[in-house]
Length: 81
Length: 492
Image 1 (cartoon, helix red, strand yellow):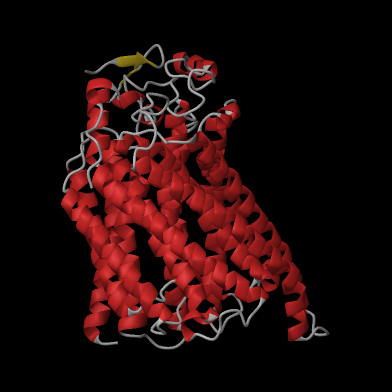
Image 2 (cartoon, rainbow over the protein chains, first blue to last red; image 1 turned 135 degrees about the vertical axis):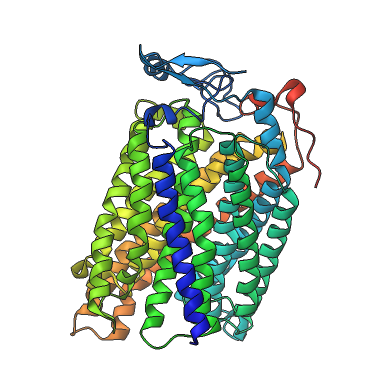
């Protein structure tokens, strides 16, 4: 273990630990922790909105609760609420 | 195209400006790197399973195939661990992360060539590493058995992926950063640091004495907690709401879960050294941190359960959901079990027994691998532009691996506890303690056969999908990519 090695490790610790703290600070300043429940909707869009399921077994289409365009009743009720 | 939906009388939310053609474009842009990483993952899964079966059979019959040094237990067992950890789980995790990053950044994937070279480096690294271990070049450090010439190549690959992730994030569409993206960025940026630091301190320029144990388990536990766990949770946090069309139950809890994981997990590693020749305060700090892990684990468990609640019937209809929910439930089980195993009284029984092996498989297989299967079932049809050829193969895959892994964890847990109690009893000789494990190890080999069969079924399904066997199906997962938006045929 030489001096350069210790320096390298210390630098890694500062850089990576620092990045995490900086990310947390940035997120707070940027408003990432505001309107949290609305943030959870960002994975949905107009074509795949809340209430529409997007996966089913290939042989089950059109028969089951996950039919395209037919919302799961419970989800839709919640989305409207 | 943008629109608003009314959440409450007073507030409106802008839905992301993504239509189906953009989503199909994003999916198609990830095709080559995702298929490359997934393909190599499945290849290494089969290789790793082969080593696992060999190692497992040797537990029943130690003389099995021991005439060749290459195939002795001391080499086959680390070859199994590294093939499944770096070959299968990491490749599958990277493939999933690439697709998720593109979707969450809401922008087509950039610099695919960089990722293709990362995939090539990755496979060369794993291949050289496995060869090195079998040739007798391996290091006797768990999770870091790869010789230096292999780990250096893997590090280059990790580095390329980390740089890519930062570039992708820089060019994202503005807006809220979804919880999955926090997990992914954390995993992708932390892991090269963990990997390089541990390798530098242990394999390139070794530190002294007991500190080696600290570095070893700081790395070994963080590989699980800050690499595999965040990728698995990021996937579950995206796929469960997406498949059901229902937002996460409590988004606040999910963010709390992420930041508490970030704070507490990296302290946990020293609980592997309970009772070892090691500063007691470090172990104690780790045990306390292990208890603190209940916070991120319970928040995640509540969230996943409450999101699926009322829709458990959908598990019957969606392959993705079935695998992902199985994995998410096992995350809770594995984490609670892990925290309890850090309590010194319980640890005195379970340490150095097959119970620990059962726990590892509960974490890396029942949790992480099952979620990766779920992700592959969701992602591959969308990026390749072809539906899974056979629903029956998917069902066989699920039941074979689900029954296989449950059986494995149960028999190893029972066998491990019996072994641990026998080891603590001064009246029982060491050789006699081994007798307690024999029937359970035999059953474990049986569970391994079920898993192997499941993996072969899955690999077959994957090859049939890539070859686009069967007639084109428009239902049910390819809704978004039909008609004029259908991606180009796969060209590799």
